[in-house]
Each structure stands twice: as C-alpha cells, then as structure tokens.
Image (cartoon, rainbow, N blue to C red; front, side, top):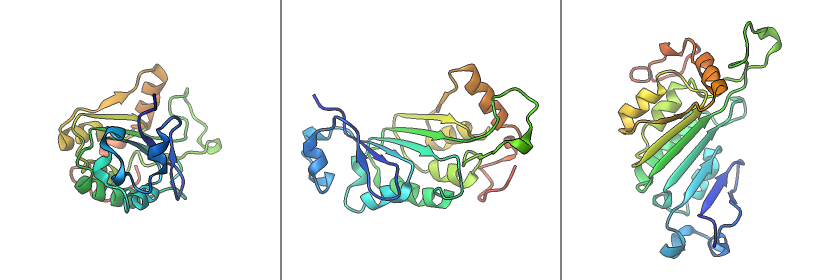
Length: 203
C-alpha cells in the first residue's frame, strides 16, 4: 500500500516526493499523464513559491487537492510577499480542485516567554505574519472544505480569511505556550487592516 501522493517544494529549484509514494508517479515527466486511479488526491507542501511555479509549467494545478504553505521566519533571502502573490494569482485561476489549505507562519523572537524581554540581546524575525500583501494574496485561493492556520500572524487575519474565503479557519493554538506566543506576537497588529490597506508597513 503506497502513501498518498505528496510533494515538497522546499528548495529554490526542484522538488521531493514524500516517502512511500507510488514509484510509477515519481517516474512520470508530468502528472498530467498519471492514471486517475493513481492520483485521487495530491498534497503540495511549499515554502518556495518559485519552485512550485516552475513545476506548474508542466503540471496542471487542478491536480492539487491539498495545499500546505510554510512561511519562513527570516525575510531576508526568503520569498517576498510579492513572490508568494504571483503563485496565489496563478492558483486562484488554475487550482480548481483545491479542497484544503493549511498555512503556518514561522517567526523567531521572544513571544511566549516571560517578560520583561531584553530586546537588545534578542534576534527577532517576525516573518510575514504581519504582511497585508501576503494575506490579501492568500485570500484569493478558492479552497472548498477547510482552512487551517498556525504559527504567528496578525490579529485580524482569521476574520479576514473567513470573510473572503467563506470558511472559518481552524487555528492551531492547542497549547498554553502557543496561545501566549500568538497573543504576544499580535500586540499592536490590530492596527493592520487588510480590508483597506494594500501595502505593508511596520507595526
């Protein structure tokens, strides 16, 4: 019994199959040629939007049923909100069979740890969890069944996604630490208004 088809896009070029996926699928030049019984679903796990867009030149986005997005905490050298939005623009038109979306915004900082913080000694990478550009692009996707979100993101993001997508996001704050960390991260982010703002600013 093979594992469900699952592909990772976590380097600037290329991709990797998850362990246990049918070798027949892995050998195909394009999944457009896959027998339907071998590809009832397809999960894409992506942190490098450019690599996925390259793959989409020869593979139909309508094959994607589940999309898992990981957003790197270090903005410098990582995909920009605009790069992500180019991917979202394509997927909103072509990923017509998308059922489930999962997004995790990573960040590095003192959030969730006891205060006071000695900020001069702390390296902080807030990631894109406060990016209006990113969340507005993400909200273009047309998933049909579920939205899950985790990590570090601004206060209004769940409400905004629910309104735009029509599905109530499930927030992964299952532990006390995660709840505290998210609350700390969201301090002052209530000022960010994705309904009105179209450009990012510092908070």
